[in-house]
Amino acid sequence: MRTVACVGAGVIGGGWVAHFLARGYRVTAWDPAPDAERRLRDLVDSAWPALTRLGLAEGASTADLTVAPTLAEAVAGADFVQESAPERLELKVDLLAEIDAAAPAHVVVGSSTSGYSMSEMQVRAARPGRLVVGHPFNPPYLVPLVEVVGGAATDAWAVEWASEFYRAAGKSVITMDRELPGFIGNRIQEAAWREALHMVANGEATAEQIDLAMTAGPGLRWAFFGPCLTFHLAGGEGGMAHMLDHFGPSLKSPWTRLESPELTPELRDAMVRETDEVAAGRSNAELIAQRDRRLIAVMRALAEVEAEEAAEAAEAREAEGRSAEARAVGGDREDRAAAQVRA
Ligand SMILES: NC(=O)c1ccc[n+]([C@@H]2O[C@H](COP(=O)([O-])OP(=O)(O)OC[C@H]3O[C@@H](n4cnc5c(N)ncnc54)[C@H](O)[C@@H]3O)[C@@H](O)[C@H]2O)c1
Image 1 (cartoon, rainbow, N blue to C red):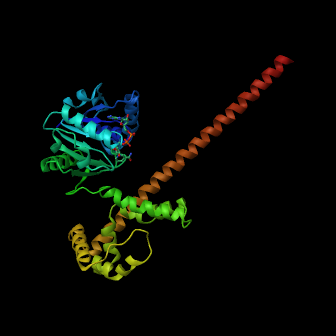
Image 2: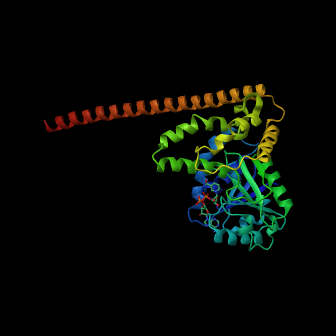
Image 3: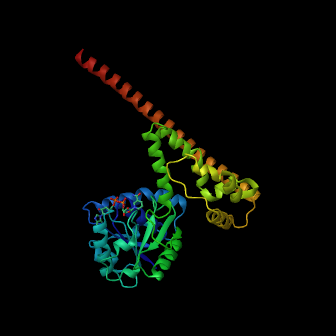
């Protein structure tokens, strides 16, 4: 498994290229836009310092990127293909059929689509069994999540293979057993986004208040404990069970426009059981200690970056001040020289 073909090299395709290069793969890319190669190389060059700070795989190099002149040449020698073309159904349907026709028969093809199901996209491919969705988050070279799911005509082995491959390539993988519009990450994000838009539309909160509420509140915790484990701790010693029994009635309060599901005994028990699985035997005290340590780690890391940014901004202002002063002195000299010439 050495070579990945990236078809479509915009924001996401280019991000995938940077990711695979940093993990030590050879990448062949293809994108029909006339300026695609320059844009792609610029994107990779601008991502590389961050990827270097993060740690490159042994031997990883931007020199392992080849931009192919045709789609067929890009995928001919590939061990895996990542499709990241524009989000238009007709285009994806045709493109996936073309990739399928050109790529070696055993190679799995992943689509970055944000919104289409593979069932809709695989309809014209001759070998739809090897087509899966591999949905990334922007930028794919830093945000680890990939959601993998097949369509009605996808073979189970292809979903498994893609999940294993992405994992080996350093991603955090969710393998879904059914198609779901928006997958998982975007459904959660979209719920918060729609509520934010409702609040702005109704004059209930400003964009500034919404962003601060997230970054200084739930967003900080969600970087390491998801909503389930977070609310498990909100239930104190009684965990998720107590949380649901205690706060269950507030699901009917108008805290969001999103309709609440009925908190049936089955749902309550499923939440308790599944959250216990996430807790994986960690006691309340252990989880609290981990949460606090991670919160402090995130807050310290942010404070460090903010201090660096403030120092850089102060330096830039100082440099700007020095050059303005130099210009003023230079101008003064020129004025005096001109006056001498006139005299
Ligand atoms: N932008 C995001 O945050 C995000 C996140 C996750 C998934 N996605 C998905 O990734 C895919 C790409 O989105 P993007 O944001 O990179 O778009 P983009 O517009 O930045 O890039 C699309 C690229 O595809 C190229 N292209 C046009 N026609 C093509 C064709 N026939 N074959 C191959 N390439 C072609 C374009 O020249 C362009 O470079 C979409 O399916 C999108 O839904 C986007």
